[in-house]
Amino acid sequence: MSDVIVDTLRDTLKLIPFLFLTYLIMEFLEHKTGQKVQKTVRRAGKFGPVIGGMLGIVPQCGFSAAASNLYAGRVITMGTLMAIYLSTSDEMLPVLISEQAPVRIMVSILLAKAAIGIAAGIVIDLIFSTHKEEGHHIHEICEQEHCHCEEGGIFRSAFVHTVQIACFLLLITFLLNLLFFRVGEETLAGLVLNRKILGPVLAGIVGLIPNCAGSVAITKFYLEGVIGTGAMLSGLLTGSGVGLLILFRVNHNRKENLKILGLLYLIGVLAGIVVGLFV
Image 1 (cartoon, rainbow, N blue to C red):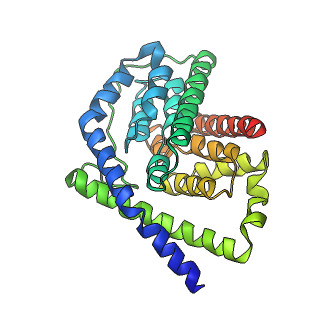
Image 2: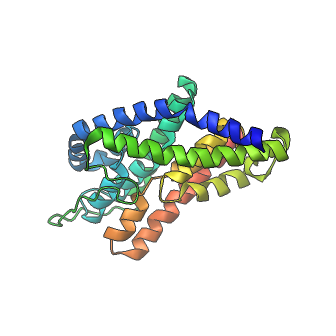
């Protein structure tokens, strides 16, 4: 047990400088380009899913939350919202960078999420051809459950993010190290989470957790070989940060919210199963 604790602390502490630097860059991008990105999505029109899917992979703190507000005001379509939800990287990218994952893997995941998001968004807009209603007042909500992005500048926000994710990583790393110690890597890799069908089904549920915990866990599990590519993709596709939480708060059509939730989960799981069968 002492070895497990020491290894966990060492593994987590060495990631903190990478996490802080990554979040500092992300916060800088957020403050410099955040409003421009939102304006671009607003003006995208019928190309909304394409623009939303491409911009969704840009690492920003509150993009999915902002998209929920824009959809609640009928400024963007359901397809654009879904493209952003599916493509947004949430905490995946900082964890991959801090773990020094190969660039090829990071780029492949981001491009896959963007492509799936764009394709799904276009199809959804064709099926649910909703028109945009003008004149609604959009309240810009920062991710209050996640950070206080508008307070204290980029250094404070980057520090808060770093502490939060480091705590999650500490817990997840400890649990993984404990499992490896008690069960063994080969046994753990063969558990139900690594199955080609059931793995994406369960990972998709984890991804729906409306904060950074889901994407942190999914990314860490994938890097440690606990889950396969299909399950990883499923969990990261359904992981839209606090976007869903904000949607249920600001969009008063509960039936519509549940439909969006169901579509997000269904698309994420199906994509994960398909990828898992061929990778």
